[in-house]
Length: 368
Image 1 (spheres, rainbow, N blue to C red):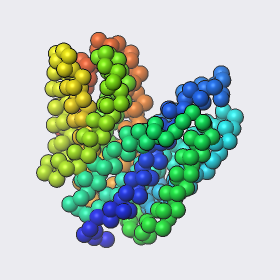
Image 2 (cartoon, rainbow, N blue to C red):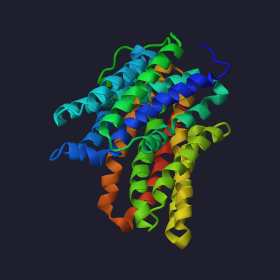
Image 3 (cartoon, rainbow, N blue to C red):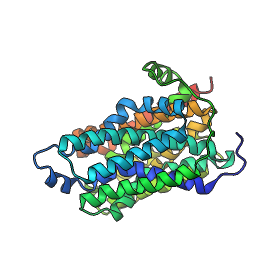
């Protein structure tokens, strides 16, 4: 199927499905206080990390399932699961049942973050593909921001509203999604897929950079505003990342995504070094550094279709990207916290330099 013109209304609808995936995390993070009051004595913080654990364990499997059943069916299934889970969570069942629902929600989240970008890349015209992937890279930050604007402390409304949003998008995409867009299928996933993916540079290279980015981004926006004595940075840094991700889609028209990833890691190392000596200007240098990190994120998503022509391989690569991204999200914050405030920026600089090296080697290996 050759696409000569990007169907932007359908791309927008798929992006809205991505916001639902982003809200799988944010709806719990933003209501954690009310959740603790509803379930006193229970470790409610695990309700946030439960989805990340699913990503760590089953990211590649989600890619294999998408490659097997096709992204249309995968997206509709995941939205249907979000509808049912949101309705069940709104009832506020006992905490063990609530956690079981989070496991189901984690599976739906994984399928969405693998299947949606796979289909968006397939539907986009070649000249627009990098821009569409840059747009996709903003789904988490935008989903979090939207949830922060519309969700209050009423758990029933927050969780039920999320399920209702998923129901609306399920109906819209049921009508809009074309059948038979992807014709190349794989058998259902096997454990051996992990070995195959992580021994194939064109499949794992995008995820490698994304995992390091995710490890740094979440940890830095958590700790650096307070460390620099500039709490006003807390809402600004994620916005800088969103702008950077959108810019990646534009830059990738002239610079290959792989080159953008490793060079932007080097640029981040330089900017974080400048932050250490910038004095009162440090917060503004940091904003620029986090914007550059957004370029890394957008370029990583753009690299998946750039390196992989076949839709089933794109699904597998997106699965690895989801898995490594969740590993980064899960580990980055506690690791940086263990280092202590004085080590935040020096450790980040070292990680960025190492990231430039390993991603540069990984993308170079894709040429063979």
